[in-house]
Structure formats: C-alpha cells, structure tokens
Image (spheres, rainbow, N blue to C red):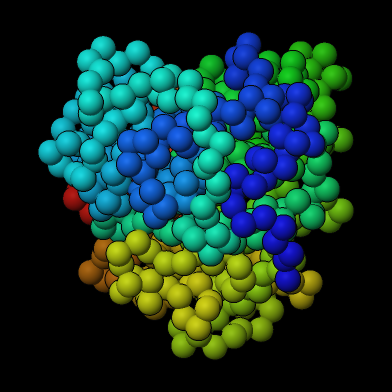
Length: 518
C-alpha cells in the first residue's frame, strides 16, 4: 500500500519551496515562476479567499482556461481546506449554471471571456462573489479582482486545513447520460494515483511536463498538473491547443521530457512533418496517451517516427482519479492499456459480478485508493457503481494471462444484433486501418428485425475526394464476419467531441435515431 507523506497539496508546495525555492516550477509564455513565488501567490490568494468568507468545506468554482491563475487558485482553495469545482470551459451558459447550482459553489473564479456565460449566476446559483483574473470593467463588492488577491501579505497565521480523506475536487463528468454528476475525489485518491505513476516512470524534478490539454479535465489535472507539482518537475503551461505548432515549438525550447496527450494529438503527430532539428534535439522520454482508445495505425506510425521515445497507452476514468492501468516502458502490448497500477486491483466480471477467467470479455471493475468517495449529493448513483469497495466502470474488457488489460468497448456502446454481441471498437479498428479513412465511429441503430444494427460514420483522409463505398464494403467483407459489417456508412467532415477529443457517440446515436441521416 502507498505511504502517504502529505495530507494535502499545500504541504507539498511548502516542502518544495524549502528544497527548490529559486528553481522554476511554472513556465507561461515568457514568464517564469519559482517554487518560492508560487507559494507566496498561493498564500496571498488563500488569505484573500478567507477574508471574503471562504472556510474549510466551502466550494469554490474555477471557470478558467489553462493558466498560472488556475494552478494558484487550486492550491489556495486547497490550503483553506475548501473544495475546488473545475468547470469545463466548453460548456454553454445553462450547463455552467447547472454545475454552479448543483455544486453549491459560493465563489467563482473566472475570466472576462466567460462574462456572458456567467452573467446570471447571482440569480441562478448560490454564488456570492466572482473573482476576475483579468480586467473586468465593473468591479464592486460582488465582482472582485484576482490581482488584488495576490498582493496580500498578512498570511503567516494561516495554516493548511485539509486532511487526507477530505474532498479535494469535485469533477463533473461529461454527462453521457442525463445531467453531469459531480465526482468527489479526496487527497488520498489523487495522491494514490500520483505515487503509483511516479513509481513506474521514475519521475524526478529533472523532468518537465507540458500542459496544453484543458486543466479542468481529470486526466490533465492529475497527470500534467498535480503529478509534476508533487515531483517538483516544471510545468510548461500552454493556454490553447491551437496553433498546434506552438506546442511543438515549446516542447523543444522548454526541453519537455513528459508529453501527455490524447489519441487525436498522437494521430496528428504521427502524420506531421517535423524539422530535422526537432527530431535530433527533442528531449521527450515518454509520450503518454489517455482519454480514448489509440488505434493500431497511430501506434505504428508513432513507433516508426519516434524510435527512441515510447508511446505508452493508459486507461482511466474520473471516478478513479483517473489512471487505472498503463503500459510499462519495459514492456508494452499493442491495443492493451497495460497492467493495473501497482496498488490497484482489476477484475473482469459477468452481469452477476462473478469473476471471469483470462481472455473472457466482461465488465471492468476496480478496487484501490483511487476509487472516488462518491457522486456529490447523489447516493443512489453512488450505490449503483460502488459495490463492496469495487467501482463498476461500465467498460467492457478482458485480462490476458499476464494481467494486461484490454478495453473492448463501453457497456452502453455494445450492439446486440439478433442476440449476438457486436463490439464497435473492433469494426472501428478495421475501418481506421483503411488508407482512405482518417477516423471512424460505429454505433447501434434500433431495428425491428435485428434489435439493433451497426452503423458507421467515417471521416476521410484529407486528399481523398470521393468516398468509394463499394471498395470499403469489399474491404470490410475480407476482414469481418457478415453480421458485423455496418448496414450504413455515412461520411462526416468532423465528429462531435468532448474536451479531450473523444468522439461523442451518444450525439451520433441520437441524431441517427432521429432520422437525420436518412
């Protein structure tokens, strides 16, 4: 079991400021922030939050793009023992209002680019004050300045309040069914994830991370923000994924060693043309992929292009803080997400929760200190997914003889046609391997004769002008049993996606069943 040296992240910050005071911990554009400076900003903002009434257990929401302000806020809230609610910046006004109201947040820290989205929050939620990180024109007793919060000096009396099993963050899931649910993660949950990942990658203060995926997302938050803060490894903050060329430039200039991404990013990297000096001088030790399944094609392309840098695929979910399994640098298996992290147990079970032998497909369930405390204000939903300490992930997969985990599909994406199980991911792998197809998504459509039928959506490779369905169908016939071949294939210019680029099959399924593609 893990040995927890700290009770909260403020203690980590304190220790690192002592050990590495003058060393840079954050790079943001041309700005560098040392461990000592970061601690000062966090202390000041924590005192400011205390002065406006935030106490242990209160909820503070963050609606911020990637920035030093996001990290400072997260740590300041943590120092008070309050709880951070990071909000997806791609959400619309009503969705943001729902999370603010459901989470019982008292204070919102945001920026002026979201002023329209938060214009009514004083009426629609319990928000008492908004702290603006940039130049908001109408400051008053309810609209406060973040900059002012960083200039406070009298904070010496303020001691860290949080304990190991206190809630650190509430992450709202993307709401694939109904309204999003708030996943309560404790310090123990996150520390357990960090300590397990640190063991495997031998990560030290000499490493450098790049954070360009959204920080509100649990994958980025744990692996690209909190892990490097724990190991005192500098973080290169990138405000936006576009232009992508800037990420490549900063990776080289700032000597990034750990590059975390999602399959869409690695697909783009595998096809991009890099200048010779990038390939010669980059210092990337590991590429790490999560958030969605990697295709075999992307893995092979990346292997050919970056011969000395392994691309390690992992698997996780918000409810597990989030990493559950990851391939090891010394041994990885294609299409596997690797063995579970050292301190976690993973089983494959049938619908009666009876364990299945290696090679048999069933639901993936997880046990360990990574498993969330529960869903905020939703005991019924919590009881549905946590049974005797085991988290039911809703993912279908199998373990091989060596304990490597393979994710086959989402339980709810499974297509049952005439009583036979069809796994969309298997069909997608075949489609994605075709030279004309960039990406695909397969979903089930209701059918009165079969129950459901598989339907495919494809995005063509850039230089392919005409979709030759006959050719694709002949190719599928060679590689798949007849009952697995999609009954319809639709070409899309792009897919609906969530914040980490995962294709939203729910949206495709809804549009399909509404008859939009007929």
